[in-house]
Structure formats: structure tokens, C-alpha cells
Image 1 (tube, rainbow, N blue to C red):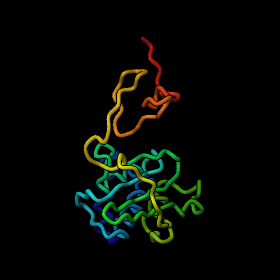
Image 2: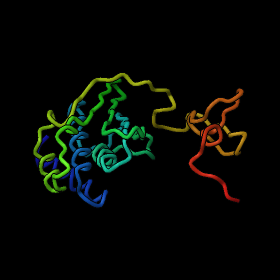
Image 3: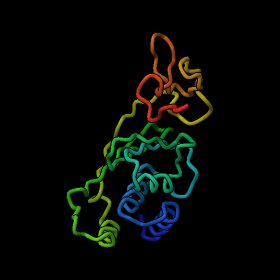
Image 4: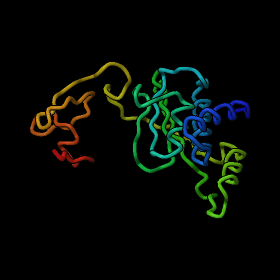
Length: 187
């Protein structure tokens, strides 16, 4: 990863996200590191990549912008585990790597935001991250493309796509009806 590429990516991410912070630096660096590891190029549309981000914080925006993967294209998946970790999966080869934050031990509460950004920017990737090969448990419905399946939930009568339902007594029920929903109807 060269400095010119990093500065270009960080500028794109900062513009999208709205500010520069440690999470943006970490997400940008870890994504560039992973793409390089997998032999993929920056700034190219890549239909050969699935990304599983494990936190819904600043880092996720950086991963999206640098990788080019998005939730709407079904190439970016949010696995809301609350961890600074991302798995990158090269569809054509079946190669999966999980990149995690090793810098957690170096974090200092007295460090200013600017000091943190500077330190993270200048720390080599090998000191910031661990890369481990992983085997993913994927179903056909996890991949991008046209709707894999469609069922109508018998409880709410809404369409559920891509096997994202739960089977209850032989019926495909949406997760909101089968489990506790994040919303409640008021009318």
C-alpha cells in the first residue's frame, strides 16, 4: 500500500462519512490491506468480492467506500457483532480472510483524536491487523444477483426475499413476526 493510494482512499471516505477519525483510518487501511492480500485492485468495480463487516460504526463506511461493496448490491453484509473485524471473500476462488484489529492494546484514552489518526496512519498494517484464512458458511441466497426466493409471511402478509425467513410449523415467517421486532405498529 503506497501513501498516494492511502491518501486518495482516505479523502474519498472522509467525504462520504463527513469527518476523519480513527475508525475511518482503520477501516481504510484494513480494506486496502485485504484487497492487496487477495490480489484485487483499488477503484475497480468488483463483482468477485463479498464483505462481512462486524460493526456498525465509522469503520463500516470506510470498508464500503474502499471495497466498493454495498448492502444494496448484496456484496456488503452487516454482521452486527460489535467487533472491529471484517471478512473478505473472493467468490471466484472461495478464498476468505478475516482481518481483525490488533491495535486495541495500544489505545490510550489520553491520546487526542489527531494523535490517534497520526499513529494509526503511520503504523504498519502488520502491527495493526491480523489476517486469518477462514472458510465461510454461505448459502446460494447469500450471493448477489436476482431474488433467490420469495415468500409471503402468513402473519403480516409482507414479502420476504432470499430465504430471510424462519420456518415455523412448515410456514416461512418473516423474522419480525417470528422473533421480537425492532418496531411495533401503533395504528
